[in-house]
Image (cartoon, rainbow, N blue to C red; front, side):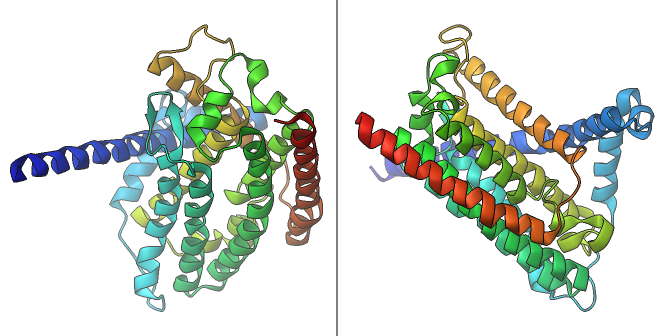
Length: 343
């Protein structure tokens, strides 16, 4: 009996370990691809010759060379830094980004943890990122790093409110926080996606979430925590080598996570836009999910090389005086619609 129990525990541990490793096997190659992809997008949009010519055919080897350089760099910690917090900060940032993947449904047959409060869990655990960024800025003992981390805290905390309200709008329609169940409720054709339901309320909620998510992941025009023109590199100015690589990896992991949430809640998740056509098998589900998420990421990159950076006061104005009031109007509108319609 004892042997059977130990074997059962060992099997459970093995299964959950493999399920936890699968997203990591996606995040690392995705980050490498996304760096190369972003360089190519900037090159085409702004006629940059560097990403076209260096690093072999279409610059494919440049990103690999950058990673090899970071791996070989000496691990330097500033003398005046708070050593323990400085070392710990990149791990806290990455854990906050990576842990969110546990509740993201990549396919009907695969979700790390199908819990009934999945969306609530994602919003909560991703808040660890701002703690890590504050740790990085404070521990660096560098005024530029400190400015960047304080900007990041103000920005992320402010924009978490419209993010939560926009997601709540979808939850009010779905009646559940379970990400997989929200996905199933949108199964069918493209017209069943929440972005087209309760028009125009959920459509506007999707736009608000996307805009606010750009601020959550420090993407242009909300990249003030990293604004190299004034803060050198912001909160990660003093980081190099693998610690910088971990912060960089976390940024792209965050980009995919917020895109995956948008796709799951508003664009049908792993569902095919053509109904039962090209759907059903796990590889079709996964393919649709990744394709939709990559389209959202392409728009994020597109905006980076199109829009100028906002000032701090403009950033706060957009968050508190534009997105949040509109979010409350959407919540009231959907609430009235649901009550009137009875569902």
